Amino acid sequence: MAIEKLQIERFVNLAKLHPVLDVRSPAEYKHAHIPGAISLPLFTDDERKVVGTAYKQESREMAIKIGLDYFGPKMRQMVEEVALLTVNHSPKIVLLHCWRGGMRSAGVAWLLDLYGFKVYTLAGGYKKFRQYVLETFTKPYQFKIIGGYTGSGKTEILYELQQQQELIIDLEKAASHKGSAFGSLGMPAQPSQEMFENILATALLNIDISKHIWLEDESQRIGDVNIPKSLWQHMRNAPVYFLDIPFEERLLCIVKWYGMQDKEKMINAIIRIKKRLGGLETKTAVNYLIEDNITESFRVLLKYYDKWYAKGLQNRLTFNAAMIKIDCPRVSAVENSGCLINK
Image 1 (cartoon, one colour):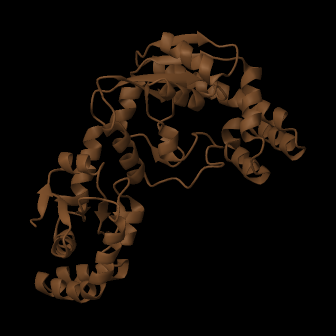
Image 2: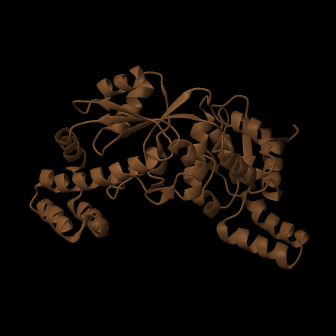
Image 3: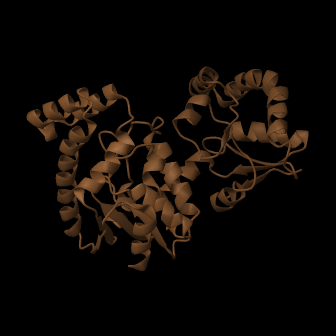
């Protein structure tokens, strides 16, 4: 069977149906990869370094010889691993890539083709995928932004909208962070900036950009990652549907959501915002928490976050973004999502 090199658009489409094998080193894969791709490294991190050094300091031929020394003993194991991955797939089609679509992907593709798999490689490799990712953020999306003070249940509303066949993008899920000093509590470790972009772009690629897409109102920075600038500018110009929910109602929800979190981690989160919160308010919030008076601790914090959100919302309006205010008596994903759709 012939090995076919695919351009990025076709590769991405076929990746929805068939396994994608990333033959780069474990460290390259760990840093960032195509979402859903399976790591099948041709070389370990140390082996890659040795081969790369030989290529730069000696010759291409010497690098290939050293690479073959590493590759030979792994051939059977690699074939068996791919066979297991495709045991329920018919026909036996796999897609694979390395960094630039060079020798690593060519070597593994040759082996799998020889064994009997139908193999497709990515022209330009992972580097081409990254270009594709960055281009994705420049498209003319029709965003609708769900706004509201902290505790408004915006994430729950987002998924209720999805249940009603609306298109959504969950930025906080992609970032593994809820976007505040407490945003990492109960969340998995955040991806690298590059991986965050890959996850976000893949979600956008699966959406019809001619239709409206709902997102939560977010700061450009979510924990340790940033929303790409071009996408952020689209968001800043999009209309904001502001859910105006009473303070006490939101406070109840915040206490419910964060009341069971680790107290020490919550105290550390409060201390991280001490400079902006102020020394007295920080001390008050921490003391309430130590006394297990979570409601009063979060009353202090919620007032702080309301002030900063109001300031950010005012800055957004300077970008000529429209704001549609929706009065909501309580936090309710079902009721409030219905209000959004009707607007």
